[in-house]
Length: 424
Image (tube, rainbow, N blue to C red; front, side):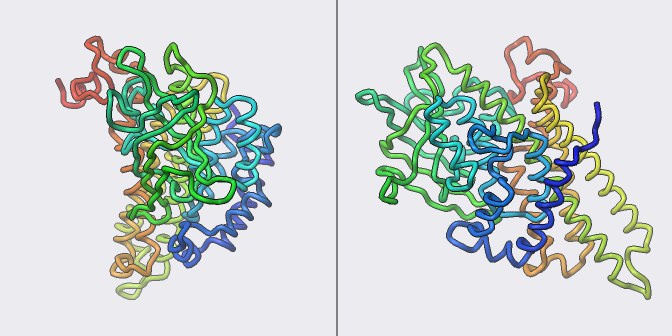
């Protein structure tokens, strides 16, 4: 395996970093998150128009750049470095791959080109707290996570041949601004229940909100990662692909494949944020003096920074491998989850030390250290926790048996990983 990046991949990194250094400094980030959309729309149009960022991993036939998960992960590393508030994850990492994998030819032709051009944005809608499960990162996604039974989650039903949605979901990334919602919904009775993915246009041709759809931006600790609550009250939707009447295996497989790429991209994004926070901290300890010398010259400080550097480099290697595996002919199902776990831990450690090593300055609202700390905390709440990511990867690798002979899984407290962890 040649781990070196191609000239084209290096150019993607250099060009994106140069643009974000000019347009997405700490002051610009603070200003963008306080707008109604939660991001700088002019910058998003520039990223889409000049760099083709939202279509980076889409086929050229649909207006994309025909790249793969590795290029998308490299781009996410740079956006993470700048803490870019933009609908990139929801559009390019979550929604577009699902439309490509499951949508019919007409659906792909209607949705993917405007998504690739940045004319539309999209996101994935799953029930509260189930994003990691839906993407098969913390457990198998073949259960009732989308809302089993007669209530809970989002329910889909057919009325005169048309699909209608009813239910609600919170913590939807950029849900208040997305033009297209890819909604995971449950349908069918107990014997034939299944999970479907349906597309919802949030506005009509006249620009008004779709009838029955209510979107509310939620207050989030990490303002650079806007989230919304979506309420669907008999909302018209279009099924992605044919109805899997015999089961939802295609939906689960598409979500799992998307999850592998999403984990790699989010891991790379976390690595970018951790690297930026570490660089800022190293720069500060070189300049801040105490007892007549820079505090970076003290061995205790050097050891702490050295440990952080090792953690970031290890997380970067894991993220790159996960991106390579996601785009390879023989994917490693546990690589994405492990890389994401390592990235989340590295970012959390770097952000905490950045606050501490900046002293009293690091605790202030005006400093940038708290932005990295909030990103670390909120990403783990959204996609973790870390121990479940690792437990799921261990189950997939068969380290503690093939899911447990008694039927216990990765997220079952009685599962083999949990029993091994407690020494049972």
